[in-house]
Length: 282
Image (cartoon, rainbow, N blue to C red):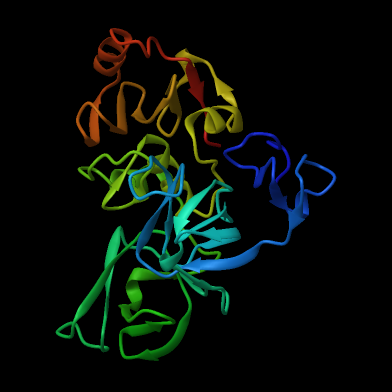
C-alpha cells in the first residue's frame, strides 16, 4: 500500500466506521479489520461509487487483478484494487479467492480464450491488454490459464516483460469506444488509456488525471515532443508529435487522433478551459 496519498478517499481503504488493518494508527475509524485478497474472475468488472449496478463507474478490474475486500454486503464487495489503489464497490460474484500468482499478462489489445487448444473450439472472453493469467498447461501454440481457457500463447507475455514504446501501445486503442471509468480495450477513458499503455510497458501510472499530472515531471510547452502528456482539468492526451494528440474523449466518444491546436480551441470554449500544462513520461 502507498501512503503518499493517504486521506484521498479514492485510494484510501477507510471510512468512519471501518478501515483496513494496515491503516491502524494512520487513519481514523471505529474499527480496523484485515482485508482479504480476491481476484477478478471475469474479463472486466466495474469498481463503482456505491453498492448498486446503476452507480457511477469509477474504475475497472481486469481479469486476474487483485481486489482487497474489506466488507461484503448485499452482493457487493467494498475494497481496494491492488494494482492502482482505487477504492470502491465490486459485484461479489465477479471475485474469487486469490490463488497462485499470475505468470503472464495479455499482450494483445484483446484476445479470446478457447475451451480447447483449438481455434475452432468455443471462444470465451474477450480478455483485454494487461489482464493477468496464470498459465497451468501448454499444448502446441496454446497456453491454458487457470480459471479460464486456452490462449494463443503469442498473445501473452511473461510477467515483468513488456513493450518499450508506450505511445505505440496507446495507438493500438484507436477507435476504442469512450467509457467513463473504463480500462478495458472494449472501452476506456482518457486516463485509463494512458495508464493501460504504460502498464503494457511495465511502467507505473496512477489512475486519474490529477494523480497523473502530479506523478510525471513538468515540461515546457515549447519543448513538448512525442510521448509527452498534455493535461486539461479532468482530461489528458498523449502527444504523437508536437502538434498531434491521441486521446480517449467524450467529444468523439472514442479514442481518436486530432491536431492539438483544434483540441485546444474546442476544449477552451467549454468550462474545462485551457490546458494546464505538459508532463514528460521519461
